[in-house]
Image (tube, helix red, strand yellow):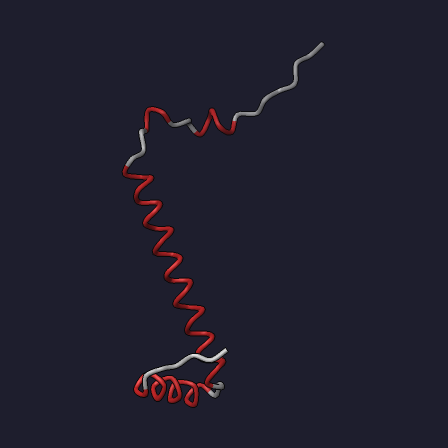
Length: 75
């Protein structure tokens, strides 16, 4: 797979890779992975904010109700 970068971006990536003793492709992969994780985190945060905004607390379950231990019935 090939990726085309603008010259300034390519040169900056090359400098970072050389400084860290990594290959250009390894550094590009690592930076892309970090960027995608950040992108995913932002998307999930947006979903969480929307759910929190629309939460109806009175319709929720208490900790006690969710985690109470159900004991088997005796015969």
